[in-house]
Length: 294
Image (tube, rainbow, N blue to C red; front, side, top):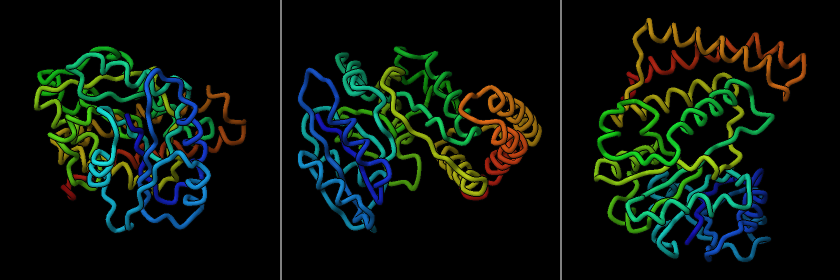
């Protein structure tokens, strides 16, 4: 099998990622494939320090979230292709074995694992990621069949993420990633489930991953994500009343999270208590405004 990692100027975490992948304890052979979009930082130097890694270089303008992963499938070896983003670092030496284990069932088309926010991540994102994957753990080892997807609407049961995933190569050859600007992973899961395939969440197959976003980048990312979900028919609830209530509830949760989290000292805690309302408002405004970009 192959672990595939698209990269572009990923030097900050790439060496740690490759080392963690190389240290995986498995009963099967695997190789590492990096598709680099002509990085201009230390990425080429880091790749050269890992001689067992296969490197395929493309022009930056040729990159596409779906297109590049489809290329990885063409270049992959074996039936299972695992995908990581360049800033997702396996948390244990058993990550890959656990991510692949469900494929013993021939009906399983794809799996994805838990994302653990880094301790230094800003608290709104940290709480979002932690709560989301805690909810998903409720469905661990319960494959999502076609009827579950059709009934779930915008529910988390339709979730899938290429930050930390694995897919059968034969499935991807028949149902490739779509050419979309965002959420190619959610689109793939929608297509697989619509075709009657099964996906499995593996909570124990965890990676360190989080985006430590300031207010404006956070707003932009939330709007892009909401727009992508609308395009997939997974429309977030966004009546004015529901958004206001969600912002209030989210603010309360995030403030409580900040006060309880031991990773933040007293002064940063106070700063974030004051910042939290703005992030929650930004998220709900982004969901509302995403309608205009569908």
